[in-house]
Amino acid sequence: MRVLLTLFLCLPAVGLALATFLALWPTNLWWVRMTDFPRLQYGIGLCATLLVVALARPVSGRLRMGLAGLILVALAYNAVKLVPYLPRATSGTRSPVIRSGNSR
Image 1 (tube, rainbow, N blue to C red):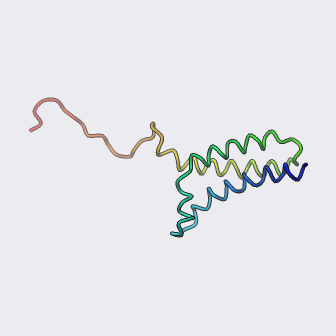
Image 2: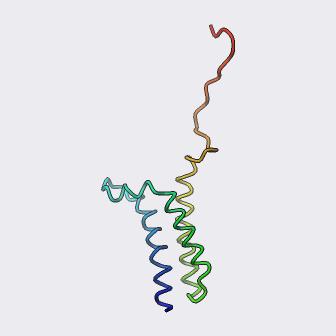
């Protein structure tokens, strides 16, 4: 039972982290570039996996801490990639100033 729980924790954590960091590989292969887009879904999956890792008491502490660290690093990378697309993010460009009256 402990082996199954360990596999249940390791496979999603390592798989999602691998999918997150695979986009860092500088190549134009379609199956690598495809991992650039579902960042929000990776984040949701990583949060759920982190919750399961935190609640899994029968698994050794070192494994849980290692998986939690891997998940947190992957979450941080996904957050850095997603922040520019949030509604409150600055665009880096200035808005045009509209003045009333004659603009000549």
